[in-house]
Amino acid sequence: AQSVTQLGSHVSVSEGALVLLRCNYSSSVPPYLFWYVQYPNQGLQLLLKYTSAATLVKGINGFEAEFKKSETSFHLTKPSAHMSDAAEYFCAVSGGFQKLVFGTGTRLLVSP
Amino acid sequence: DAMVIQNPRYQVTQFGKPVTLSCSQTLNHNVMYWYQQKSSQAPKLLFHYYDKDFNNEADTPDNFQSRRPNTSFCFLDIRSPGLGDAAMYLCATSPGEGSYNEQFFGPGTRLTVL
Image (cartoon, rainbow over all chains, first blue to last red; front, side, top):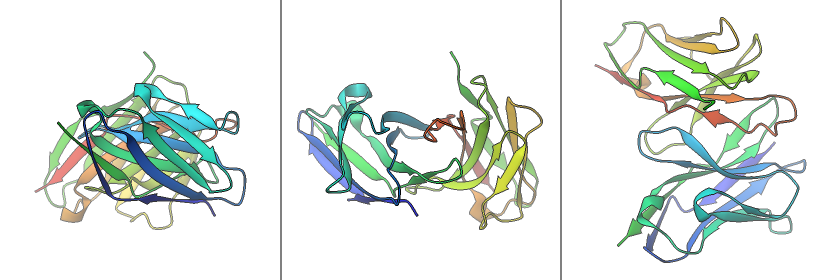
């Protein structure tokens, strides 16, 4: 069965600092991986996805993630945090039967 | 723009009073999902439709029902809402086969139960 683990329920950074949100996956088949962002009282918005093409995936709003099979990781990064990046971030892996399996989420806090 | 629309955005109901949440899509996707999301938690899948085929999650309470009258619309019915059903309800869609299960979410309906 597929699963993802997000380390750190909260991550705090200063504006302009590097953002690193961690996601490790477990999958019995080659995984398809996703990062979603959720702003308060909104739905989930796709940031980026890995579908077995390039291992370094670039997404919207300056975010990127690197698929590392040897580490079973798909960490999300952004070189310079902006106040508008403050949100909840969910890592997800494609499960069976048209489903996604979500991690527990990481809340990103950005201070001035 | 193609999108997933949920109405209403905010719904207040009384304990035990049936409520219906609606979702529509202009993406012409085969799969539609309903999730329940409580504060600071990941979305929890309640059920989904692949075309007209209904798939219920094993732990979804009987209090929750769904209808999909056509490709574009899907409804979530809560027959007798309890205080524990207060949550954000998210609708999502996916093209289906060959889509890696990427899902497109609506803005959600926040349900308050008094």
